[in-house]
Image 1: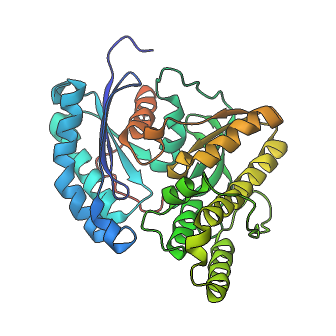
Image 2: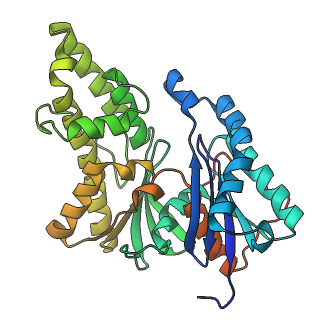
Length: 340
């Protein structure tokens, strides 16, 4: 740990949450998130509305993060921000603000890959949470991503499997929409699944080569299943909601765990970490805990507040870049597609 205090102000604005955090030498002093309720009535994130909300939220969120951390802006060592991937309009708000503030304070600017940050969230100094040792496998699961990453060092990462079409979060949300559940539906499937029979209905698992995933066929199978059954009985969903949710969740978790088992076998690495919004799912968390006993894996499950988009994970990535003096140029631009 360095002798001097390294205070990182982190900004995250990749989708519909405006977030700011302050870290001192890797420890969280504040982690503020402003969520946008405006998208619920549209059944998904509307990019134009998201970027406007970021413009409204960014100043108060940063002000609150600094105040809660009891840090004056003149004591900030560097500013870390999400460069991508994400919605371009949303990223532009965070990128422009971070550049302006760093320039005004005459301090270094650090660009962060959002997907790397989800993985590096495991290195936040947090009581009661172990940190993985290199090398380890990370599975990043969210509304936009499903990846298996071999992590050899903080910024030495290789994607060894990814989705060929839709991400796992989308499979949850679209299945929920088919069942008539409000957006975001993924957490509702998790809620109802707890009281249902996971083997009540059988859904197909896509056959995909190697360590890659596919969820588009699964979504179609859920749609056809619901259409077929409601034709026979219009009240089918209402009567069987918990069992349907449990069966959907059971199948999705099976798809993820099957690929993880294959990745562990192929790489010989049995340390597995998860990250991303879908890693908040209780069924997935339980499946990983079971894997520790069943197959002797060492699994790392993040604290709930570090699963969905947040600035603390941007800050820890920024902190490790600061130690390497890996700073960004002020000509840096946002990137909606940004590979690990």
